[in-house]
Amino acid sequence: MSPRGATGSKDAGSARQPEAPSFPSKHRSRVPASGDRPPSLIPPPATRFALVKKNGKADAREPPSQADAATGRRKQAPPLALQCPFRLQVTPPPSRGKASPVRSAEEVLLGAHSASGLPWWGSILLTTVALRGAVTLPLAAYQHCILAKVENLQPEIKNIASHLNQEVAVRANQLGWSRKVARLTYLKNMRRLVSELYVRDNCHPFKATVLVWIQLPMWVFMSVALRNFSTGAAHSEAGRSVQEQLASGGVLWFPDLTALDSTWILPVSVGVINLLIVEIFALQKIGISRFQTYITYFVRAVSVLMIPIAATVPSSIVLYWLCSSFMGLSQNLLLRSPGFRQLCRIPLTKSDSETPYKDLLTAFNAKFISRK
Image (cartoon, rainbow, N blue to C red; front, top):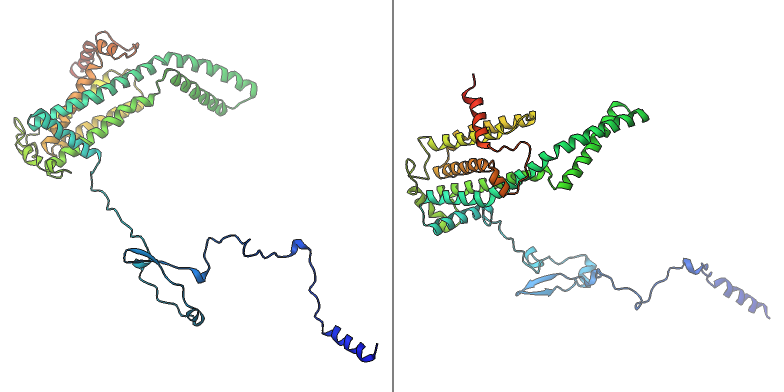
């Protein structure tokens, strides 16, 4: 080989580019082919488009041209109202009382008035008696049934408490418990055992409060419905026309049911009947707890406070309150009858009396009349 040829080969070798270092196959970044590439959920910037509301139809906007993209100019975006292909419909909030318990109470009163044909004072009394008899009387009987079962469990609870106290005392001596630990252990196990008794006889005391959760809202809704009738703020056309009928739908000394009772006869009657209900409840309880005593005082105060409140509302509302309180008093006396309790299958208890009304008069006389 000639020297020139050797030199030429050497120059050719020096001009050759160095090869890239080879890496293991697991370190190489594999670029998938166009057929293997998974479809992207987000379109590329050049193909993105916005839906525009044009003539009631959704239309696609063309992407910006390359010249605009190169110069950095952006087309002016259409108004916000045109960018959204769908128009948001904002539903206004329903009017107060629409499809509510108050409106249902108004419909009940209107239905009773139209079905009976009585004047409004008679319709109010009829509706109150019907609701009290159909709703609260069964719930009151159920309440007395639960309370009777709880009362009959007291001897068994006392027996369990005695045995548990002895067992905890023995265990405390064996394990060296402190007085606090022994007390907590006793209370925890006693609570568990009493709960098992309530489940066994299906007489949890909380079930006795169902009457309150039903009667109180019903009383409020009926009162608000009568207020709407008296002030012309009812939620229906028929209800708005009731105000004129109530103005002449009264009786005796309150011919106008939309006006206040200036004689205070209705308000005072409401307070007196409520106080009688409270005292009857207090007389039938012997050896009540301190908490029950506080509750009794509180309800007495509320009964007295109802008198000035009743003097500031229309007579239609006070008439409903008076009838409701009278039905509550009658219901309380009826549930003392041994025959009615047997009819309602209320269990017998040690505190039941064969002459409940005579005993009630004797206790009332001893507490309020013969008291020195």
